[in-house]
Amino acid sequence: ASFRFAGQRARPRKGVEEAFKVGETYLKPPGSCKTKWRDCEIGVEVECCEDCNIYVLDVCAQVQVSDCRNCRVVVGPTAGSVFLLNCVGCTVSVVARQLRLRDCADCDLR
Image (cartoon, rainbow, N blue to C red):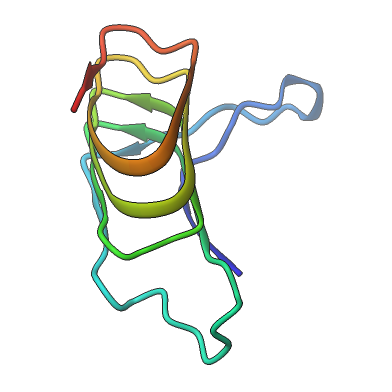
């Protein structure tokens, strides 16, 4: 199972232009990812956001944040990895077993 908060990525071959979510707040409060199956791992994917506040405060298996600009990202306890891709000008606070970065610029990591 997974949760997703995203705008639209550009797909030039299909004629789709990118559409970012702008100025929104995304909150996964503690206890919101519970499932009735204890062995089920929950993943969260956030992409194509600009000037957003993103709070993932529940325990998850993995979190992926990609193509975000000038966002504030707070990720609570993560059993696996947090992966940041193509983020620019973001402030990121993370509690995770592993933090992975690719093509990030001007980000403040905590």
